[in-house]
Amino acid sequence: MRNNVRSNILRLLAAIGGALFSVLPLHADDRAPELEYVPVDRIAKYSPLFIGETHGTREVAGFVTDLISHSVKTSPVDLMLELPADMNELIQHYFSDTITSKELLGHSFWTRNIQDGRSSVAVFNLIKRVKALRGERKAVDIIAFDTRRDGKKKLGDRETIMAQNISAHIEKANEHVIIIVTGRVHANKALLLDNNRQAVATQLTESQRFTSVNMVATSGDYWACFSHPEKIFDCGRKVIGARQMTGFDQAMPEGIYINMKSDKHFDGILFFRHVESSPPAINR
Image 1 (tube, rainbow, N blue to C red):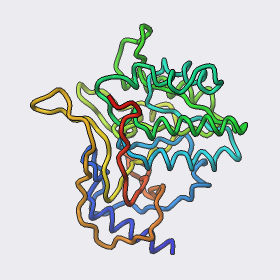
Image 2: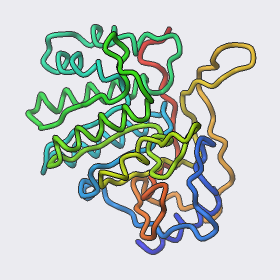
Image 3: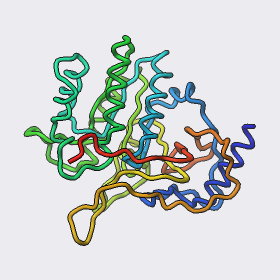
């Protein structure tokens, strides 16, 4: 069964030729790396784990919820989200019931005019699920690591600030299972951006050992904001431009596959057959 799954994944990647969201290629060449499926109850050993996603789907939040539920049975779990770092205090107040969900959603991040997938219903439901697990006395926490949006915002490159925030937490909580959910650009371990800037994960390779996987799917849609010639941003449901797949097995497990051969950009993939868009938690 495992060999069949591996064979189907290899044919799938060859047909895809990269990540289907046309945001960043998977960097799989004609000799796609050999991939090994990792059951959800064994993923914790790859911590710290970067999940490089396309923001704005339901499926990543659902997968992360399942992963946390399995991992917290044996270890404390820290979920790091691409939310402004000044939201950390609010999240802790929400967990302790000193503020309501409505008050948490009052943070400017949730109410900004341009709502991309980072502030989706799925993300907020994930926060609520973590709160519920804490109510069951599970050792799980959320850490926001993006640049602040308040008066204490640091000056400097956003990639570097996020890398510093993540690195500081890894150093502090190295015995925990750490899951970092971020955009796939930030999760790339070998990516130079404009002006010779390094992506978050690229910077961290110099000081930390971690695993980074790139989300791919064969069909579906996601919520995003794109530049538009007639308005500032075009926000809404975007359809994945998937190609026809050959050798695709509908029984192939969704989840994480790790490269058994070296790939400098990602250590594996988070595979979904189909994804659905998740709109903003607050619809403006």
